[in-house]
Length: 293
Image 1 (cartoon, rainbow, N blue to C red):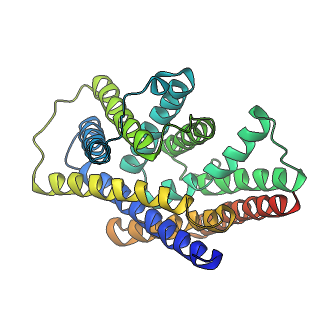
Image 2 (tube, rainbow, N blue to C red; image 1 turned 180 degrees about the horizontal axis):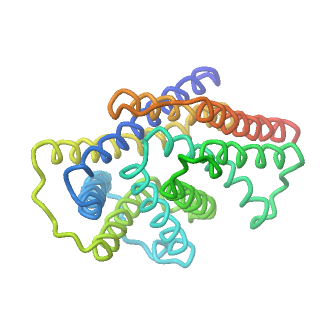
């Protein structure tokens, strides 16, 4: 396969993954209208873990390995738990479009963390992009505006959790593949649901037809999204494929407007543009650095 074909394949898988993640968010948000959030997380997490367990069994992959219990993997699990729990709460309790927009700053935090904790060379252009990305988040949040909601900070905490998870994943043992990380990731969602359910104290309910269909669809779409993302990152040039993560912004905002009647205003558009521009600059600088080596 030529480099051009590999890049095109990677881009298509990335766009498919981002569309699926946006649909997953919308289905979770709809199910949370009918059921307690803790119950939604538990059912969704166990369903996704079961799906990855079936895939691993089919391929004779052992999910229980000593590396899964290493300190690094436990740290990754904590970040995953924080990211999943707070982002799911944000999706359920705040506008889907705003949660999706803020989440797009995750790569910016990953670059910041790589520079601070891994000693990676960032460079002044990337530092400017990091600062610009954080400013974009503030524009979307509008902390000084009258319509600011403290619930928007749920997405910020979730974003920090996802960034920490991604940083920990960089050092994950090579023997732990996508199915391992997916299996434990969904188990972490179920654990997050159990913790939140205990704190929330709401009795579980039997899902009605709509909620059950949304949860089943979220599991199927979520597993597809995760698998597509793994395929995207293993096809073509990473610096070419990665920027297409930002298509999730279009899908998330579109679903928020069409399905939930959300309103998009000028600060939202400006903040999204700043976040995307900073992320693209970081990706472009990474590509230039690789070429210079």
